[in-house]
Length: 445
Image (tube, rainbow, N blue to C red; front, side):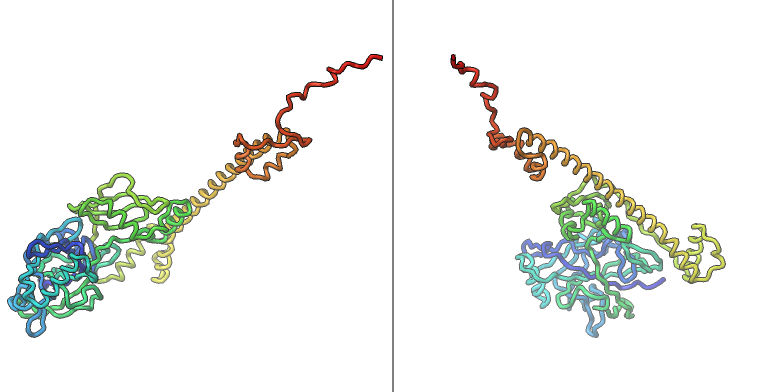
């Protein structure tokens, strides 16, 4: 049986998770790994993380990764490690929930102050509680895994190994080391119980939600179309969206993936949910509809010794399925070119379909605009004709004022009367039908 591999997973502590009761500090929710994450080409499946998390309980949280007098990395449970690295901190309440493996760290202040690094830790924790922490406290989970060979992809990353039978040794608090960095940092040799040295892998866990809003060419085109139609989210940042969504999630839930119109989140019990959201014109983000329960799946692909032949067989099968003739006589270069052309066709069809939809939408908008303009012209002509009646002005004179002004003149009951032809007042003359001559007697001759 293959030897277990020693792995260190780096993560950071949220300052808001630090509290104190009596002489005990508690750091809540220190995340060691997340479901389906791929680090250094190794997949950490949900079932294996859930199975191994119990081994984290009551393990030490030493000052850094313990070393012996020769500078070799050793187990935190080793007597020499307890004498030199233990500072009164242990892992408790280990659990796998919401798609994450995590634990809380409890620190005995009196024991911590007996160790030089423990004093630094207490100062950092006090600063975090007071809201004065400037730098995150980094931790590094030390564990052993049995790695099995298998190819696949998870969370957008390819893997060639799968971590199984996880056994936690400790969770180091990094006060004198840089926690977040490249895999090369902190790499060394681990001295196992048999006195043999083994290579250590150091990786960094990312618990941030993944941004899939513009993933792929087709998704990008769809995003452009939605934006042109007034339904896009390009003007709202990813941080704005995730912050708003987190505020609407149930307590202890975790946002996994963000797409252009929906998100995937995990509840405390590890159930995955898909829920639509919308972004309004003012940038506010809100859930729409009810969450739908979904299942996350990971596929395992058997590894063969002849990878090139396997790839070639896959290409030939795809070309035959697409009805391409003369496949058997093609060179490797011709096979690859033909395969790329076949793969591009579905995207070309989708791009054309999107283009057709965009053209149709633009045509519809043009129709609405023409109809609206025609209605406005008809209303303007009607009002202008009405206002020009019995005046010296023509309808064209009123039309030149524009529809808004004409509506105002028509609706304004207190406005001065419009001057009619002849320059007289527009008020009706009550003596217009009377003749004064009719009341004058002719002179008698």
